[in-house]
Image (cartoon, rainbow, N blue to C red; front, top):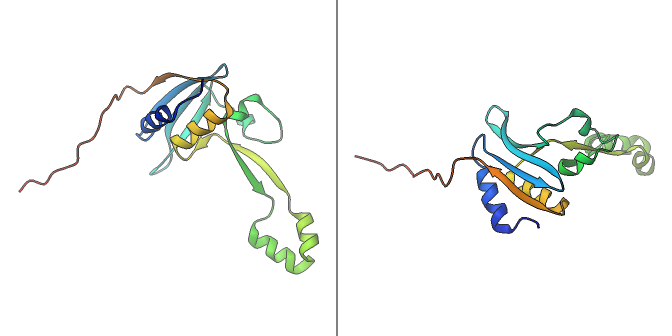
Length: 146
Protein backbone atom coordinates (compact mmCIF):
# COMPACT_ATOMS: atom_id res chain seq x y z
CA UNK A 1 0.00 0.00 0.00
CA UNK A 2 1.27 3.46 -0.85
CA UNK A 3 1.09 6.57 1.30
CA UNK A 4 -2.09 8.64 1.11
CA UNK A 5 -2.08 12.41 0.56
CA UNK A 6 -2.99 12.94 4.23
CA UNK A 7 -0.07 10.77 5.36
CA UNK A 8 2.34 12.60 3.07
CA UNK A 9 1.10 15.93 4.44
CA UNK A 10 1.47 14.73 8.06
CA UNK A 11 4.97 13.33 7.47
CA UNK A 12 6.11 16.44 5.59
CA UNK A 13 5.04 18.51 8.62
CA UNK A 14 7.33 16.30 10.73
CA UNK A 15 10.16 17.13 8.34
CA UNK A 16 9.73 20.91 8.54
CA UNK A 17 11.22 21.10 12.02
CA UNK A 18 14.96 21.08 12.58
CA UNK A 19 16.39 17.61 13.23
CA UNK A 20 13.06 15.88 12.54
CA UNK A 21 13.02 12.42 11.04
CA UNK A 22 10.72 9.84 9.51
CA UNK A 23 11.41 6.11 9.13
CA UNK A 24 9.69 4.21 6.33
CA UNK A 25 9.76 0.64 5.10
CA UNK A 26 9.63 0.59 1.31
CA UNK A 27 10.11 -2.51 -0.85
CA UNK A 28 12.12 -4.25 1.89
CA UNK A 29 14.46 -1.31 2.54
CA UNK A 30 14.35 0.82 5.68
CA UNK A 31 14.47 4.44 4.56
CA UNK A 32 15.17 7.21 7.04
CA UNK A 33 14.49 10.81 6.05
CA UNK A 34 16.29 13.18 8.40
CA UNK A 35 16.44 16.97 8.48
CA UNK A 36 20.10 17.99 8.61
CA UNK A 37 21.94 21.24 8.25
CA UNK A 38 23.51 21.72 4.83
CA UNK A 39 24.86 25.26 5.21
CA UNK A 40 24.78 27.82 7.98
CA UNK A 41 21.03 28.55 7.82
CA UNK A 42 19.87 25.98 5.27
CA UNK A 43 18.39 22.58 6.06
CA UNK A 44 17.89 19.66 3.66
CA UNK A 45 16.25 16.26 3.90
CA UNK A 46 18.96 13.56 3.83
CA UNK A 47 18.07 10.02 2.78
CA UNK A 48 19.56 7.05 4.65
CA UNK A 49 18.95 3.59 3.23
CA UNK A 50 19.14 0.80 5.81
CA UNK A 51 20.83 3.23 8.19
CA UNK A 52 23.66 4.33 5.87
CA UNK A 53 24.59 6.10 2.68
CA UNK A 54 27.59 5.45 0.49
CA UNK A 55 29.49 7.72 -1.84
CA UNK A 56 29.41 5.05 -4.54
CA UNK A 57 25.65 5.60 -4.90
CA UNK A 58 26.16 9.25 -5.94
CA UNK A 59 27.97 8.55 -9.19
CA UNK A 60 25.80 7.72 -12.15
CA UNK A 61 28.54 5.56 -13.72
CA UNK A 62 27.66 2.34 -11.89
CA UNK A 63 24.17 1.13 -11.19
CA UNK A 64 23.14 0.39 -7.59
CA UNK A 65 19.67 -0.70 -6.44
CA UNK A 66 19.72 1.99 -3.74
CA UNK A 67 19.86 4.76 -6.34
CA UNK A 68 16.13 4.57 -6.97
CA UNK A 69 15.52 6.24 -3.57
CA UNK A 70 17.92 9.14 -4.26
CA UNK A 71 17.37 12.48 -5.98
CA UNK A 72 18.39 12.03 -9.65
CA UNK A 73 20.01 15.04 -11.29
CA UNK A 74 20.75 15.67 -14.94
CA UNK A 75 23.90 17.69 -15.60
CA UNK A 76 25.58 18.92 -18.74
CA UNK A 77 29.25 19.00 -19.63
CA UNK A 78 29.13 22.67 -20.70
CA UNK A 79 27.11 25.51 -19.20
CA UNK A 80 24.66 27.46 -21.41
CA UNK A 81 27.03 30.44 -21.61
CA UNK A 82 29.92 28.20 -22.64
CA UNK A 83 27.69 26.58 -25.26
CA UNK A 84 26.86 29.99 -26.76
CA UNK A 85 30.58 30.68 -27.13
CA UNK A 86 31.11 27.28 -28.79
CA UNK A 87 28.17 27.96 -31.14
CA UNK A 88 29.79 31.21 -32.26
CA UNK A 89 33.11 29.46 -32.88
CA UNK A 90 31.97 26.15 -34.40
CA UNK A 91 28.35 26.58 -35.40
CA UNK A 92 25.23 25.04 -33.90
CA UNK A 93 25.65 21.51 -35.27
CA UNK A 94 29.23 21.02 -34.14
CA UNK A 95 28.54 22.63 -30.77
CA UNK A 96 25.54 20.34 -30.23
CA UNK A 97 27.77 17.31 -30.88
CA UNK A 98 30.12 18.48 -28.13
CA UNK A 99 27.43 18.83 -25.47
CA UNK A 100 27.08 15.72 -23.34
CA UNK A 101 24.65 15.01 -20.52
CA UNK A 102 25.29 12.83 -17.52
CA UNK A 103 23.35 11.83 -14.42
CA UNK A 104 24.32 11.97 -10.79
CA UNK A 105 22.39 11.23 -7.63
CA UNK A 106 21.98 13.55 -4.66
CA UNK A 107 21.56 12.16 -1.16
CA UNK A 108 19.30 15.06 -0.15
CA UNK A 109 16.05 16.72 -1.13
CA UNK A 110 15.03 20.37 -0.75
CA UNK A 111 11.80 19.56 1.09
CA UNK A 112 10.18 16.68 2.91
CA UNK A 113 7.20 16.68 0.61
CA UNK A 114 9.42 16.23 -2.46
CA UNK A 115 11.27 13.34 -0.80
CA UNK A 116 8.07 11.61 0.30
CA UNK A 117 6.42 12.00 -3.11
CA UNK A 118 9.51 10.59 -4.80
CA UNK A 119 9.60 7.55 -2.51
CA UNK A 120 5.85 7.04 -2.92
CA UNK A 121 6.21 7.19 -6.72
CA UNK A 122 9.12 4.70 -6.98
CA UNK A 123 8.04 2.17 -4.35
CA UNK A 124 5.40 -0.48 -4.74
CA UNK A 125 4.66 -0.67 -1.00
CA UNK A 126 5.41 1.91 1.72
CA UNK A 127 4.70 1.71 5.44
CA UNK A 128 5.49 4.18 8.21
CA UNK A 129 7.78 2.80 10.92
CA UNK A 130 8.45 5.84 13.13
CA UNK A 131 8.43 9.63 13.32
CA UNK A 132 9.99 12.10 15.72
CA UNK A 133 8.55 12.39 19.25
CA UNK A 134 7.40 15.99 18.95
CA UNK A 135 3.75 15.03 18.73
CA UNK A 136 1.40 17.83 17.74
CA UNK A 137 3.63 20.55 19.19
CA UNK A 138 2.47 23.84 17.71
CA UNK A 139 4.18 27.12 18.47
CA UNK A 140 1.85 29.83 19.67
CA UNK A 141 2.24 33.24 18.01
CA UNK A 142 3.77 35.88 20.22
CA UNK A 143 1.37 38.46 21.66
CA UNK A 144 2.33 42.00 22.46
CA UNK A 145 2.00 43.18 26.04
CA UNK A 146 1.95 46.83 26.92
